[in-house]
Length: 267
Image 1 (cartoon, rainbow, N blue to C red):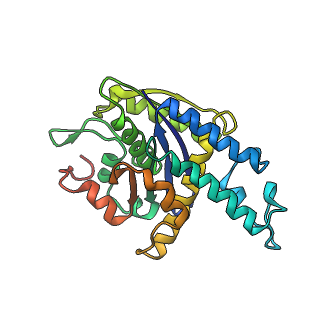
Image 2: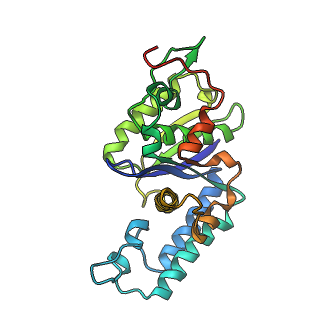
């Protein structure tokens, strides 16, 4: 059995990129990881970590929320220690994320979007519809399948999501759709749960990963040569396969669609 802890960023209307990502590994390792993460929060007297709050500043360029009185040195030390918790467990707990450029997805044909969001083909015709209008289903599906693919044959991958209330219903529907589909890892899809970030501190690490991936995605739209910053680079050091960290712009989507024989729209 393996466990995945996942979060999302950019599912709101008008977001330039949509991200689903987090970490997967064995329950025992995650228990030790959670203790190390919580010890760091306790050391700095932080009740719960949210990346958006950590990097938020007031109109006067002062830190906000729990970090309002912090110096830059204290903030750097804190985020470095959280990053090191992830890095130190990198051989047992692995990052996974898919960053989708929304405009690139919307430029695809209807049938291309059907295929990439779960539409199954048989003898050149679609036998399931997919979710072509739901941008977030592609990164969601990509990460779920990616984690399940790492589960041993005969084993299960279970998931904990820190998704907002609006997305929770979608996640349940999409996950049920995946379990009924013909994907090769269907038999490895286990249970899903929706604990809070305080109930499962491992979700706070997923929040950090998704926040950084969202910022990276925005910058890479502007500058195609953009690379992950030092924090993100260190966090994703434990990635097992190249496909566990996907950036899906025009080129990335074209690679997913290469050599796929799709019928014309309307068929």
